[in-house]
Amino acid sequence: MDIPQNAVTKLRIMTRKSKFSFGKFKDETVENVLKLHKAYIAFCYYSIESISFADDILDELKIARIPKPGKDEEALREHQREVSKQYTREERFHGWMKRKNIMRKMDYAQKTQTDHEVFETKGAMQRRNQGH
Image 1 (cartoon, rainbow, N blue to C red):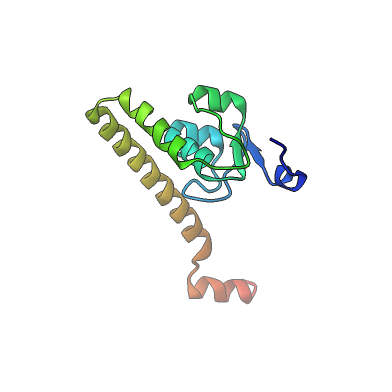
Image 2 (cartoon, one colour):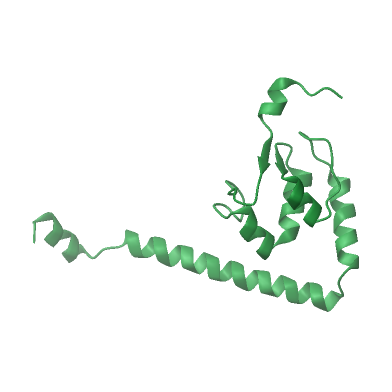
């Protein structure tokens, strides 16, 4: 199958050091997402036409290759079924809770960092503006 040249230029192949520019893991590296939520990588691969991952990442996650650019929701469901077979229901629940707690800590750190930089008291702003 020949892929038009304009389609090839729109395909982004992400490596471990690449950062997500979208979604709940925006500004996180692929390496960090692999530690936090491997299923998100598979979801992105099968659901987003213009994104692919380096072969070592696909091999590590045992992701079946699909033609890119393109997406395949049925392949995603099949991958999810295969992964689910490896774990008991309790193991899946504990993994979900662990990811939830990590995401909560990431959100808190991001909020406190931006809030600290943004807010300043009225008196502090007046003193700074008047050169004191």
